[in-house]
Length: 199
Image 1 (spheres, rainbow, N blue to C red):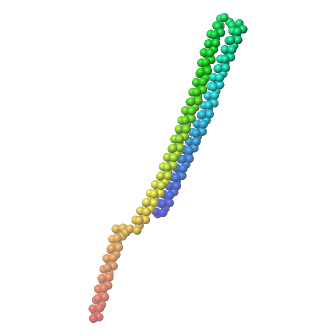
Image 2: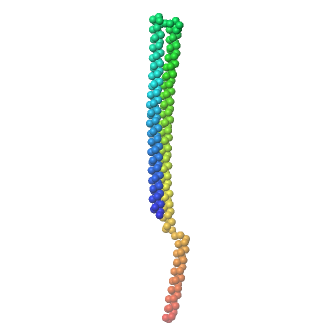
Image 3: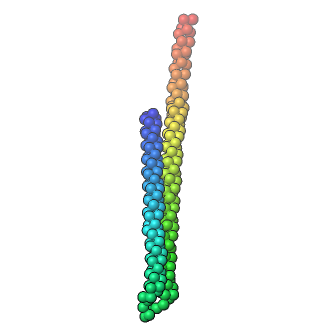
């Protein structure tokens, strides 16, 4: 019966060990998923930031083209007196173009930094998943070893207990020993009685 109990304990320990391995693999898969997401987040943020950089370059180019048009119109004498002077138009063009350029560059920086922050958060989650997997694996290993140790200890106690006489067995042996002694005394008395008759 103790051998069967030890086998069941070993099966339970193996099951705990395999479950710990499965949990570790699951957390490792989660960690890799977070790492892939972090790479995609960085790539997507870079792509979006490049769009804003292109918009900034387009705004700068439009500003230069507008200024060239103002200078050409002023130089050719086709400037409308009601539209303002060339200097005022140039100042207005620089103001609008510079503002749009600054917004586009700011959007580029914000998009890139936001993507980096999201990627760092996903990497942090990946590290936490790996730590959880390691903890689950260690917990399963300790549980399996504890089960094996407990089973071995119980089996050792059972084997030690079977070789020790219980108080009931000791009393029984003592009772049988007393009866055996009394039977020997009776036989010796009968032998002495027979010898007396032959004398």
